[in-house]
Image (cartoon, rainbow, N blue to C red; front, top):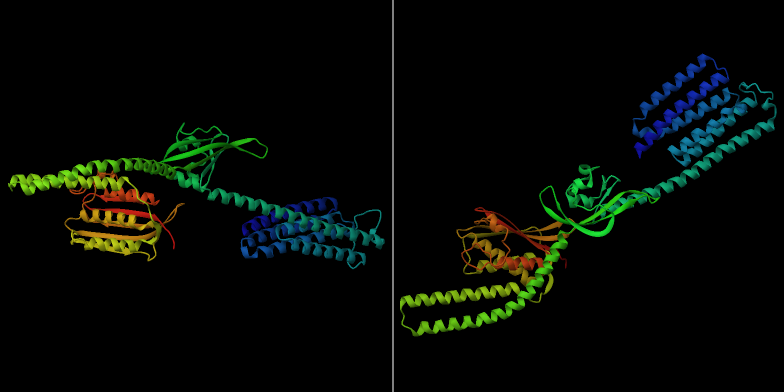
Length: 529
């Protein structure tokens, strides 16, 4: 605001210098003002203008300097009116200029004060001249107006009334203009706020398809700022021929390569940008990151596959388990009835062991394929973790060389989950971490609250071990079923954990360095009691 007022006052100063100079020049030509007087006035005005401009740099003096300048202007006009004939002077209309200045730069109140001041000074000059207190400077007309008192009063009344009308009309128009301007500013800010908070990205181009606008969502989705792509062709941003920029409302999809190398799916449509007269000004490119939608679609397809596999698995497991039970029972009977030849016993033990392993595979496959009814509720994840850690430590197979360290950033980290399923997730990750440290090590468990952009609050659970780590080629397929790098197990635990977390609208991320350890991070949407 101060900057705007400073610029206005500065331009007023320049305008004052120009108007005053032109007035003096015209007065010198018409009224035959002496050269000395003329140069004195010009020099004085220039000097005052320089001093005034220097003082304008002090922001706290802006209002004072504005009033001072307007007062000086009124005084100079009053002097010029007296010098050019008083009541007969044609320069009296110059009083309108400071009246308009004050209303424009300061306020309607300032305009009223200026009007009253100008009216009083003008009336005083006329009165002093009428009563011959100061000398009259006639313009040389045929009639001496001062000889007619009623005419003097009439002219004085008319001119003072004009001053008041100008002030009133200017204040009225300025008020309407300010209200209109405030509405325009409010609408502009509203539009900016809407564009800024849109979930969809928006890019506007000119007639040449050069980018002239990009909202905040577009910058976040594309991973770049407007200054980086300003006035560049939209094809240079998405790739030549990658997008169809012909105006249409049909939804289309492309894959966009970010600068960080990540490829994201984008759905977009293009419409024409027109002005108020309906003339084409450019195009509007509206798009959205479809990563979440694509993940959801893939999740739905996976669930459908799981449902079909689950139905098949139930029947298949029944058909497999019955023969396995028969084989196992028969071998046990033979083992007890036959001569206890070491070789025979060894072969039978292998059969029994492999039968149990095959039965475990079938059971794991069933756990992975079939779904059970979920019982959702708001649970404290710290409490679930404590229970899981206690179960692990009290297990007879627990490696006592493993040191479990846990740190909870918040006591009330709750989430809307199925407690039993989430317990299974934590147990699977804890068991895998302990198995990765056969010679011992540290397992650090941390919980914290995390805010993800446009996704909300999530409870993060971190499991960091100092074990053997995972090779890069195995890391990419770590959550696939029946994929394991361990000497025991069937590789179903992490696949089940991943499926459970996804069903809870969460995620599992893994970081690992072979030979140094791994870090699993489970994120679940926060739920409040």
